[in-house]
Image (cartoon, helix red, strand yellow):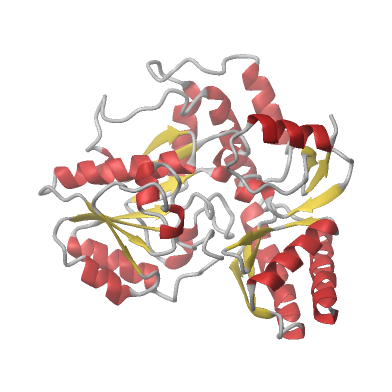
Amino acid sequence: MSTEEIISNTKNYLMNTYGRYPIAMVKGKGSWAWDANGKKYLDFVTGIAVNNLGHCHPNITKAIRDQSKKLVQPCNLFHIEGQGEFAKMLVENSFADKVFFCNSGAEANEGAIKLARKWGADNGGKYKIVHARDSFHGRTMGALSATSKKYQAGFKPLLPGFKSVAYGKIEALEKALEDEKVCAVILEPIQGENGVVLPPDNYLKQVRRLCTKKKVLLILDEVQVGMGRCGKLFAYEHYGMKPDIMTLSKALGGGIPCGAFLATNKVAKHLSPGMHGTTLGGNPLAMSAGKAVLDTINKEGLLDGATDSGHYFLDSLKVLEKKYGKLIKEVRGKGLILGIEFKNKEIAKTVVDKCMDNGLLTILTIQTVMRILPPLNVKKKEIDYAIKTIDKALQEVADA
């Protein structure tokens, strides 16, 4: 099918909910993707931090193929072998004691919100949830209530009991927690949709101490930055603290829809049969993919690889930052979530578009930031290719 035919079907039959580029992707391998015209791209979008092992990793495709021949979906009224196995792997590699599997990041955050409120109901009737301004936790109504206001327009009234505070400002959070009806704080360890915003030094440690002091749960949304993206399996490991609840998705299933929220025993015990559920969450196909993802990350040393590649990439971007100081405001990142903040939205859009035209895929976010999300197993020569492409685009803008 041609690009034109694919785009025509999209326009005619799909709801108009995405500002799509005029590209139709049909194939991927490793860090590379091909469109319907046969053009090859270095894909540093990776499905928005989904394909952490690149496209069609052989371990994942084998796991999916093998499982699809046996059992795809029996439903959660029965014990599912892969669920217990994958949950055990996640527990053994994290702070948590228990796991609930679902299908997406928004669903994981909805579940975390329900769990926090049930815990709060059992601990004095607490129900309010504090979140960071300009955060992104999903587009379903509960998750949307804890998300940046720009995504909320047209969907009010939202879920009551949510309060926003400035990200990275411990004093603002401390004031919000004076309200004795607060049951939880939900934060992204690194704000992805808001332009790869890293927390100030010791901020998350201070948040943890404050939540403990105020007897409030801490939920960390690691939907985008978990599963090795930052050079640790989970981003919280960088900051010397642990949450009470953590949400995961995106890279969790290696491209197969898969989400989860994890919790300690003292929190998880507040859910009992009938209080929460999902039809498709934790199905054998997703579990087989998830096990393959985590096993591959651990066995192939991809966490160290992501750390080393991240340092190399960030150092290379800082060279561009110095070279194009009139165009770039700041370069930042941790591991393999990287951002270039430009001086204005016109520069940002032009650079992202020029890179795409020259075969490099990145994401424009908050209009001024190029977000870069390579796979964890990215090769040095691929990073060099990306740097060369970004350099070329910047030079063309500077010369214009």
